[in-house]
Length: 156
Image (cartoon, rainbow, N blue to C red):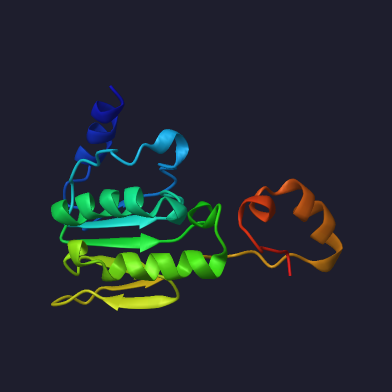
């Protein structure tokens, strides 16, 4: 039923150049086998897709997408970094892009520009992190779970 609903949403605009999804949260119950119906040649996965700590499952999910879409653009959300450090997570994301199984079809959008060949389209990608004012640091640190779930992450 849910897949039917997703398909009907995308069928409304078959001429779309890009199919955009975010916040799949595949890390919940390890749902990395989730199927995305193809409705465009390009897929943008705009953050909170899964955890980089679940590297093999995340890689397999992305590989499945690169087999179906001409290009897959991956933006990183806060949940990608859960259970790892930002630095380590970013290295894992860069490694995903280099995986031979992606056949050069995965594009990591981290502070980066990508010009689509033979077109006038440019994709700009970056994660928009918040700058926490000093006077709000204590309450944000205590209420936002990212500061407990992303190792070595701070409001500074």
